[in-house]
Length: 457
Image (cartoon, one colour):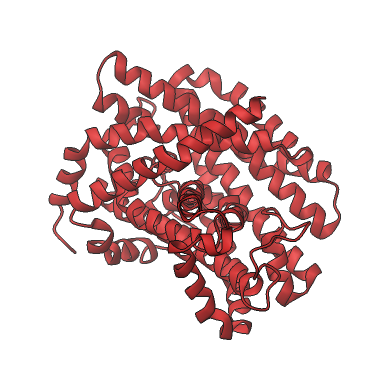
């Protein structure tokens, strides 16, 4: 009964509310900033990779710009890129990837606004610690009771969506893929994961930053090498692969089935929902990391934040999608007819795809290792985002209780797979968008002023 109710809510949110809000705010900021994602993309890449350092200097408070980006990418690049993208393709067809690209393109402008506002409204406490995120710019946009209501609504949603249910989803993916690939019992994986996470959760922001700045570049590089190896071997199928992405974006009924309207809505909504779960632009999660960056002006972190969405969607997610489509959906693939064989699902689709080239066992092991690092780093980022909101609501005294509950959810996630947990995670992810986007529209002037105050580099 509860599962049915949550699924109905998610259906309306993803099919209508989410698409309108995400595309709307992304288009709004693209126009208002003069398409900042195009104008300052090169500058963002320069600021990101020109200052790349796996051993960033220590800061008295906060993080370096790259550490903040690494923490944001750690949160962005998770099961959404492997399991989420797989689910989008299975449900919405290869064309769902096209709509993910559209969401991500406009999302780059959205995340610029989020990071800029997080910098503009962050608070430095007397002890020197830095705190920032949507609750701070929501209460800046709306004074009084309405602002407090929206901020508390957002804080509760993110604590549930990311801190608890989301981390449970990530640990479930880790447990199931490692168990499949290496035969290690899920409960053993769960205990090890809890120990690793507890060691970092109970440290400060500096410990988290030190981990993410090393793990994120390495995990991305490993996945890129493996994915590119598959595409080199399947290179003759790449024209067909790209052709299917564009064809089924506008004619999805040919592979999904049903009426054209139903199929198009399914492809678009899957692209929007899974695109959000992947790059998180508009959700209001990554601004918590960008608020901690020590930069000379908010604009600098805004352009760096855009690079995070680019890496997440146009590099990592796209590479995974190309591997899946070029091995499973092309003329010699097991999904070429659009009929899904028994035993194939979103949880093992990527492993099946890599297995067609690397061999079943090696493919499963490769994806399991990548997913472990993807999901583990996401857990670290999401726990931090939830903790910032717990501190905002309850003060420092709430941190220990929050951490204990989060670790319990992480362990339980490795033991059980529940459709309800996935649906609840999706629901609260989507509910976060509403107060966040309302504040983004209200603070347009502040974001536009940030763009105008900087000379084009």
